[in-house]
Image (cartoon, rainbow, N blue to C red):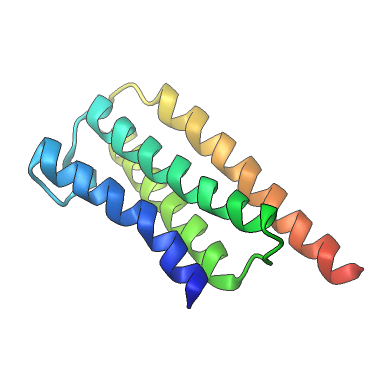
Length: 116
């Protein structure tokens, strides 16, 4: 339960920013730069909480993994929408690649911890 609350904080902060700046709760409807700002706040906040848990010696739970996958899927949905509308999506692709690398890194550490 404590880990879920820790991971919910960046999500709440990013949605508060989304509402105060853009007056909406729908990140998919945002234009490119506004979505990228929202998405970076969300991603950096979540991964800061994940690495903070790792520093304090906590294990990565399934809830953490589900948070990472759900944020990745929001980016993929926006990527698909951007491709269908023929918009430039280069920065989003780079962010998603980095996010996928971090997910694989966190997951490989989880597997190494189970093997020990």
